[in-house]
Image (tube, rainbow, N blue to C red):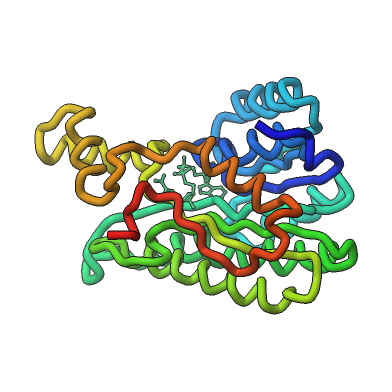
Length: 264
Ligand code: NAD
């Protein structure tokens, strides 16, 4: 796809043990960046994953198990990355969870967790990553928002609020650093078939007594005019582009990769 344009850079990708985060981590590694993985999962599998990415792309990888809802653990993660690789040059705020319920039925603890993991974690990683990026006069902050950072969706109050919030945080981060080599942009995917979305497919299939394929088809038909899922690799390619010199004047953007969702 591209040369090793990110050789010597270090990327921290939160929530990179599966789905979109893993796709972005792989693309950044393919471009030569060392990767700090984060996220939950079986520790043996994660160890195998980071070893295989290191071998496949000839980069260094490391993993730190921080819960992104906890400020203290985020601070430990940033310290780990700095001690391991010197500094974080590329910060991808991707960790996220979802819960579906009407506002009046929305469990308060789910609201708190979604805001903490999908939004507040990005505030913490950003504030902790910025000093070293500014000192180098180079940095890339990529926030994985969603089409739900741009438009609403019934029953997703916390998720929509958090994603609108991260779009706002992206703009402010970009503006505060506009006269430096540090950029901040948001990626806004439509449906990507990851474990997070498979849960919604399963719920739809169970509720309507539908096959897995029919539930997926309906999900796409309702919102995503292309009728196809976006892939983690497509989002990874965009992340690599946002790290390039060509994108150095892209500041505070929200970039849809959504099969036409928001164009409707
Ligand atoms: P996923 O469930 O496959 O991956 C989520 C990742 O976040 C995993 O690595 C998980 O371990 C990690 N994670 C969850 N809670 C965490 C916590 N407390 N601390 C640390 N890590 C934690 O989901 P995904 O679909 O790949 O989602 C990734 C991001 O993309 C999320 O921010 C999500 O909102 C966003 N997104 C997804 C879609 C989609 O269609 N899948 C669309 C738009 C935006």
